[in-house]
Image 1 (cartoon, rainbow, N blue to C red):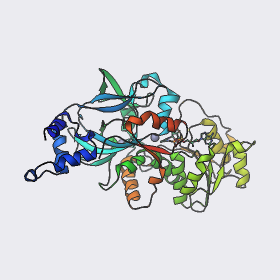
Image 2 (image 1 turned 90 degrees about the vertical axis):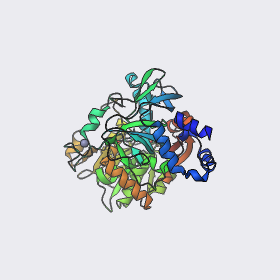
Image 3 (image 1 turned 135 degrees about the vertical axis):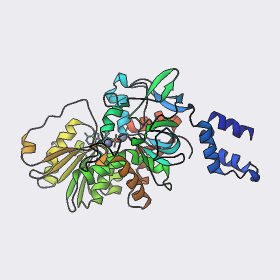
Image 4 (image 1 turned 120 degrees about the vertical axis):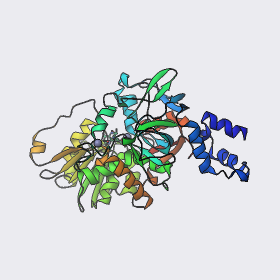
Length: 422
Ligand SMILES: NC(=O)c1ccc[n+]([C@@H]2O[C@H](COP(=O)([O-])OP(=O)(O)OC[C@H]3O[C@@H](n4cnc5c(N)ncnc54)[C@H](O)[C@@H]3O)[C@@H](O)[C@H]2O)c1
Ligand SMILES: [Zn+2]
Ligand SMILES: [Zn+2]
């Protein structure tokens, strides 16, 4: 019992393994009528309004391993929600910040934007959430009040452009400190931490039945790829599609093309190990650019007698973006840029557009983020959407560097890290 109260006082009950929590619960005398839910609320009361000290993977510098540190997480301020992160995974955008853009002003930071958790406490003015709600953090906000949110033609939100400093891929504000230094919140989310604080416009409430160690993937990669096919490209039934890059984003794009009724889905990747995965999500043809001495758009144009109806670039490479555009059919082809890079310009010939192709970009799959994520979680629970099939590795936050290396070396689809027990 004394250890139980000690844990409550230091706010560390949630970092105890589930077995220990259950053991603690069963050791309480029945007359106290305390169940796990009461424990949860009691713990919240013990931590609400206080600084929480917890574990996080801090990226101190670009191109260096992250370090598991104890950080301080301040209480949520007006319109903010403090969330206990249960599970998170690594997306290529985390790698882009750490190894590719390496913007020195973007450090120290806590990476992670594909996670799921439970609300611990809320700040003044928050009415939509309460402690105990299951939620998914969003790197793209949906305030529901700005002119963009009110327009059905876009998923952009004015708040997103003031909340996040795009140059350094971090929230303008941060509630994190470590060793006396302010630590940035990558994409305003920072899910590689046991606790995080996020503006309520960038949090989606989800079905309480959702398994957080699975639906965390709906915080970025799956919604991004799937939505790019169904919302942005608006793939039509009976069409031919090509998806470039078969990470989680590209595989989800394949799944979206299949759901939209595409008859032929050509999966393109320089790593042939990815083709078996692509088959699971509905790919019908497989092309490795390394097997051909001709430019890949010529290969696809020949395979399809004129080009594909829809092409989706899910790599983040400007040469591949051009190839994807040129692979789409003259006259009506639609090509969508999904991969992220801000390092280079793209060179194309005007004739590729003048001759009738349409070129689009897609952020978070075109989903209005709060509405889209809640609906995608429901579709997963209703067995209309694959999610488990994207998980190739299960790890813990302590293994964050191993998970990052797996992604970097193209050895995983998604490595889900358990952060705090639910
Ligand atoms: N637009 C958005 O909102 C958004 C959201 C999430 C991720 N992204 C971006 O989407 C991209 C994919 O993310 P991911 O997590 O799936 O990455 P990933 O690293 O898991 O997958 C990338 C895949 O591309 C393949 N590839 C590399 N070079 C290639 C080439 N020349 N031709 C064909 N395939 C090639 C790799 O072998 C790998 O399978 C990244 O750029 C990421 O930053 C964008
Ligand atoms: Zn991402
Ligand atoms: Zn808005």
